[in-house]
Amino acid sequence: MIYYAIFNGRFGDMFVASTDKGICRIELNCENAGSFFFWMDSIGKYAESMDKNLKYINQLEGYFNRSVKKFDMNMDVHGTDYQKRVWREIMSIPYGTVKTYGDISKSIHSSPRAVGQANKKNLLPIVIPCHRVISSSGIGGYGGEIKGRNIDIKRYLLQLEGYDCSIFDR
Image 1 (cartoon, rainbow, N blue to C red):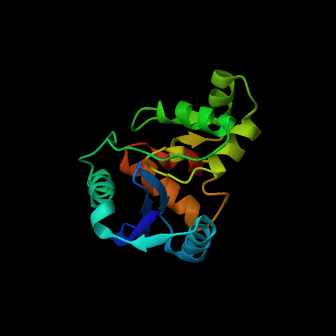
Image 2: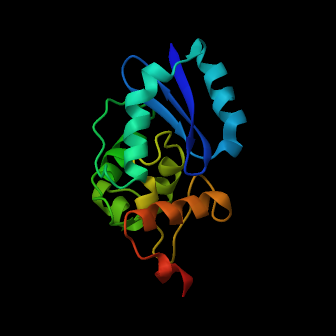
């Protein structure tokens, strides 16, 4: 059973979903509501529950208020073994710092493109901080996009953590 909640976040309505094992999806961009509900339909049973998701929402709000720099929550993460390996490496990137796709690929003996593809499949942005992974030549992508709203969100998250994004404007 998936429990979901909608709350007013930094980018408008945000969606959080969890199971009894832990948080399993965050949708930062309310423009993707259709894909969020399509995903839940593909899973099967789901119900709206603020109570089941309040602990996750509180930590996300704490992150946006700069009082939470490291999350303390159970996760119910689904992906290939390779994706999980990439995500574990990404979770080791400290708050306020970045690594390139190349840095991650060297750490796990892979390719930067494969790291980017695994990053794109991350259903727990912010908690698995894929925004901290940048290109060697710029900000890189976010949520499968290289321009537009998702890149604005990535820039915001990096700046929230104190990272100087002006280097991407040169």
